[in-house]
Length: 157
Image 1 (cartoon, rainbow, N blue to C red):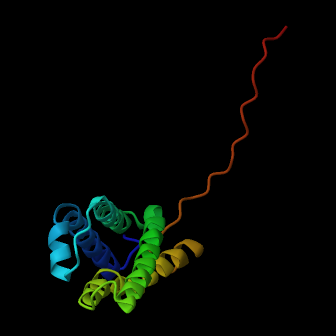
Image 2: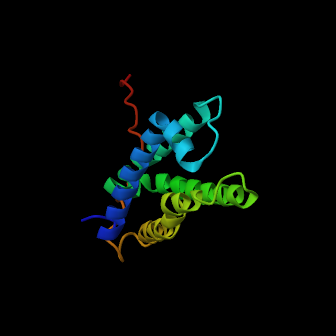
């Protein structure tokens, strides 16, 4: 049994695939992205490519959460915070006129739209962890009690 409801697992796999593809696009096709949004291409492309690398890695992280939610739930927290802060920065840049309004649908689909479901999944995993899995299918590892160290044997003497 999975610790996640089916829609949660599907969403995480979708987000993972989307982020991997978006990250690859930012790494390999960044010049097309600048053209699409009507933004002048910077002289140095390393920053956008590094962001693409992080987006790609978050995509891998979402797949890891889908496969092993209990062990990887902190990756989802990092992804949630990244999408929250990225959304805030994006909205500020659009409001200031530094990014064109055509960027808003991308921001909505790439970041803002994931915030509510990611929060629901995080709360689901936290609740399952807190109650020991009784209300969901998430089971905790049994606690192992510390065994006393074996007494060293001294030769009789």
